Amino acid sequence: MAPAIRIIPCLDVLEGRVVKGVNFTDLKDAGDPVELARAYDAAGADELTFLDISASAEGRGTTREVVQATAEQVFVPLTVGGGVRSVADVAELLACGADKIGINTAAITRPELLTEIATRFGSQVITLSVDARANSEMPSGYEVTTHGGRTSAGLDAIAWAKEAAERGAGEILLNSMDADGTRAGFDLPMLRAVREAVRLPLIASGGAGSVEHCVAAARAGADAILAASVFHYGELTIGDVKAGLADAGFEVRS
Image 1: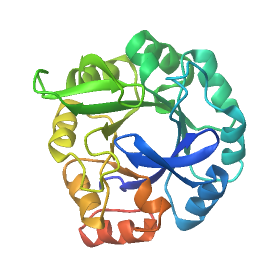
Image 2: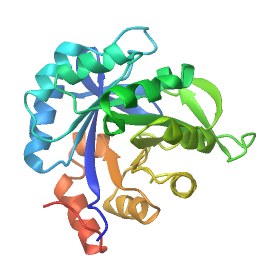
Image 3: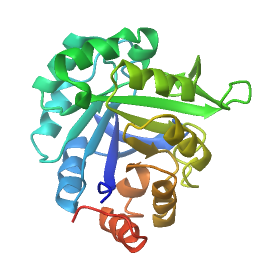
């Protein structure tokens, strides 16, 4: 039997508040991260992802106090990312209550970091966050971006996913920068391309707007569905998505 499809609400945190916009712009306040985390835990979320979305751009670490307060309120695995640059940063966030660490910019700058973290803590703590967008000049048709999609990394997204898997990443959070916040559906061709290239667990992110979108992502090879605004603003519930996936024949956690 295939593993259950995980449903993961995402808390994009800026200055201590959860925010959401379209393509990482026009950000609007969506609530208190601790309160939202508590509500999602009670609603049946399988995991939670906490991303300090301005940490890398501002050259600082993740806001530890908010991470610790959030971790104290939930009983599901918590992935934390934003501004992680070293093994010491990972150790500190794990001590604050994180179960997994999301890494993006620092791994691109120094790919050896993935191996260093995997060697010390195990691959299971590493979630490689890949913010990708269409670029016809790349061999796969997709490029990697950093700093909230503001900067091109000059890397082919599929090649980077394969390299990261070889270096020790435990799973891939694939976020479509073109679809992010649009609620128009996930980038299914990109999901399929990454799924064909790597066997790591794959989290689909960017574009969730309906239960049907989530089912389509699972059919494209996603092992988990991450969403933000549709959950924050009550347009979908975790129960809605799980029921739709179950109706489509996918295993979900009750």
